[in-house]
Length: 263
Length: 106
Image 1 (tube, rainbow over the protein chains, first blue to last red):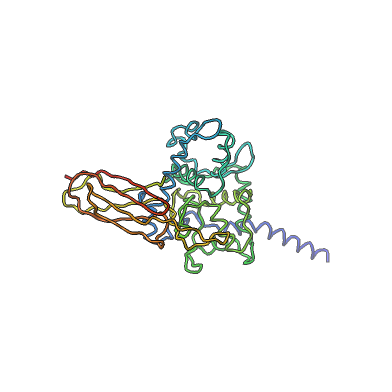
Image 2: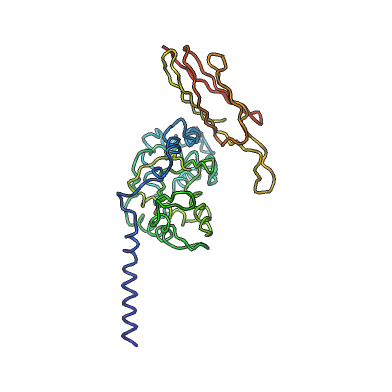
């Protein structure tokens, strides 16, 4: 009895040790990592490629106006602190979500903008998915267009990235699916009529033809979770940012396309 | 204020056929959708787009509720003389936007 239980315990330990390795094996190798852009049709790519035909660029224009608008009792605009954004905002989106030293946890670009608004401009934060917040985020992220996603590999970031990975690989919802089952194991195959992409957040906020508007990664994640018939996270849930962080880390090396166009 | 993106070649040869591309931000609410409160969302669309070349109308489009948000309109014209291309959108709720582009014809 006793030795048998011990053997079983050993087996369980061995499996537990193997589990992270097995999960790692399912990762998409760097050479096969592809942006959602490459899964799109020729016509949709043409919309994204043309800066005067990409509807996301309308939001970038709007964002530039908001960047220079003075807000709150401090009478400061984003430009008052950040100056020439072509230098100051270049590459910023490529390393977000980033761990905020004060909060001790990662914040995404939208939350960073709102932190700036409440702390520096002393004004009200913008609601998630509002036209203004999307426009500002698109404008800031657009300054990193063409740069590779580079999430720093430090222990603190990794801790939250691992939490995100756990969510990514966890089965949830009535369909009992995990994100990984579609986007790690079955990318390139079809789900209904649509190709399953690899789920790399390269172009957020992006213009989805289905939405007929710009939308954030949050909105996309909510969409996926509802599709899995799982309970979506509330907008301010830390799990969303952990997941966003893992997705960005998973897409490291791919170039930022903001504002991307997706079907 | 609606944001507009215009793509017009800055220079063209006389007699050359040029493509003019326009994009404008607009929700193009069809008037057939129902909001979360069960009430119909009132129609809010662009109804007319015109383009004039040195004051002369060269293109006109009537837009309908079936057209997607942020309408993209591209069309061709012959470059005849240097001057100004004026684009004008008008629609529901007194919507109106104008944009101009200058072209040099050699």
